[in-house]
Amino acid sequence: MIRLGKLWHTQGTVHVCGYLQHPTQGFLEAASLAEYFSRITDEAALASELSKANGCFALVVENANGILAAVDRLRSIPLFWDQSGNLADKSEALAHLNLKSLASPEILSEFLMAGFVTGSDTLHKELKQIPAGHYLALNHGQSPQLKCYYRFLHNASSSQSVEDWIEQQHTLLLQVARDTLNSLNERPVVIPLSGGYDSRLLAYLFKTLKY
Image: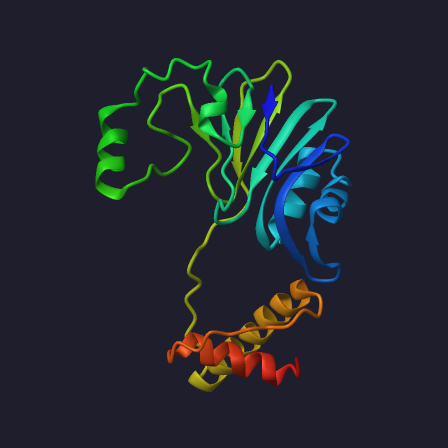
């Protein structure tokens, strides 16, 4: 059973929500995003595509083996599941679960201290979530399997000079600005000037790119 909300776009056996910034294909959402992921035929292909995907999205792909589902690196759009292979974008959509079956005291303590639960657990023992940077394989006749495709890891290096780091950061910021402008599709930009660094930086980057 797959239960997804109105914000999702379905194209055949591919369900997508959100957007993706592709290095060559540009800003993808709705039909174009579904078309991008429709090329996925197996789990290995999904893992390869996800490792390169940059954006705020979630997807569900139905194939001959079962279901593949994924969230982005930040888990911008949540997906919930259970051991029976049911999948939904809202926990209440899986209301058939015995939601009185609370998780362990350790998980409840984590929620009370942090305001959320990390990993694949939720406050209910039978209800799971796909963590950030992970995908879920729900293959017929097999137990659900969560697999990681991306982790934020610090890569320490002292070989670069401060000037090199500044240049690298400047290049990265320009690329972020290009991606943002690409998603606007030539619409006007309005930047509220708060007097802080963020608004001035955006104005500088957009002006540098002659938008």
